[in-house]
Length: 215
Image (cartoon, rainbow, N blue to C red; front, side, top):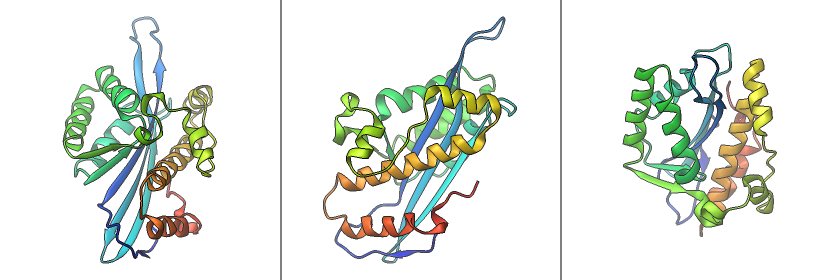
């Protein structure tokens, strides 16, 4: 975790978590039913303490040689203490339905139930769909919006994600998701007023070596 960065301004942020997830559709094969597999998740935590901001990013991934429930369990554990504010991109029509599908089709029903319980707790708090500011369900591609805001982002295609899952390439999955949560946070800041100091603190954090995720 990077050291605290001094924050000055009238915008007083609530402790915030930014979430990004990746999943694949596993087709039915023989007696195996079709499933939605959660293959990666990343969380950026932004904490405001005593006039300073602290940032921490973490990621998890599950590939074909791992227990399919690993990332699902990791996410449930991460949300056991719900954040004050959760930021998502396309929450209602993409992220939430996909997580429900993951739980509904999981082989590990105990892990699935735990995930749904923790998500229910999270979604009773403040949840912000950052995409609403950029067109909501009609928003263009995330990478196009990020580039339009001057935020570099190279998307991972569905084919690349499936290949990374098949070949056990955890690094590619996690790097993609970490980049995405950072971009979601930056897009949220860009959509609000009086966040210059917080945006400057974010930029300072992003340009330090400690900004890299600890895998």
